[in-house]
Image 1: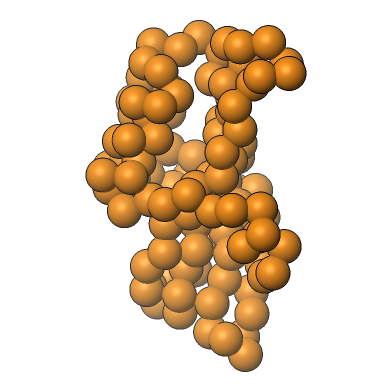
Image 2: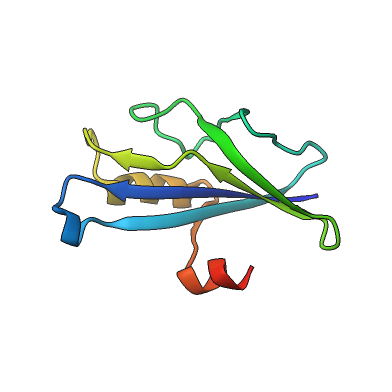
Length: 106
């Protein structure tokens, strides 16, 4: 089954009007499907923020043999590294940006 991990990031360091929010996704094939409450670990996650993210929602599409796994959102309040640096680390480990249009079309 195709597993699509969804991670929602935002930085509260800036004021509310200019706060940055991003959605990232990592896709892979697996015979193991995550369930709500599981903790997902990934080399792209920075231990300064998390050792892993909790699964909060799983949506399964058996017709397309895929599922979407929403991870607990991350709000960076005490930024040990900048949000841009964290996103670069995610991208280097197979994560990519997801546009709002792409989210709506699913």
